[in-house]
Length: 222
Image (cartoon, rainbow, N blue to C red):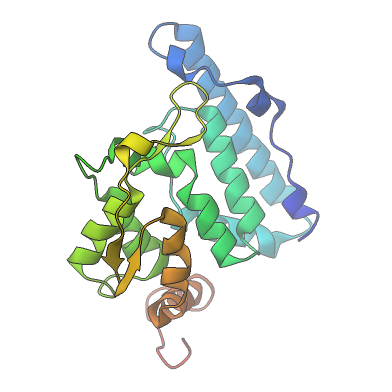
């Protein structure tokens, strides 16, 4: 696993993002597609030749769990860094994993949190965070989503650097009640869900479906 987690990103990741030029120059669009294709080919090669196939399966599992779509956010650098976050954390600590995901530009834009401002709240990231990422459907209330979305307001992406950026003007200094606890900062949503019994059960179900039986979950085994 150690050697698998040292997976290097392509050198173009550190050469700067050109996504802000997309639409002006066709060559930039072609470059984005080629860069993503090179990343995907590298991943396929790793899957085929790895000496840690169990680890690669974990990467596939969590890539399907923390989903980001290049077609929705055509920034190859963000796509690469999203993949690196998955690789770095698939066999690691869930608290660190969730911290990284909440500051992942690919996730932020795919789930529209770059348009989530306290004056005009977008609930997509908050809803996915509770329903798909951490707790599973039915283990939270609608008010928890609404309040968590307000906590996540202002979590955005710099349009030039394509790095995570906090927009003070888009956020709120207030605290909001989520799952029975007052929280104010996005990173407080991580220990909040980890201490819920539903979180462990939900992840156990995901692993059961992946490794044992996709069609029928055994609650006793979970």
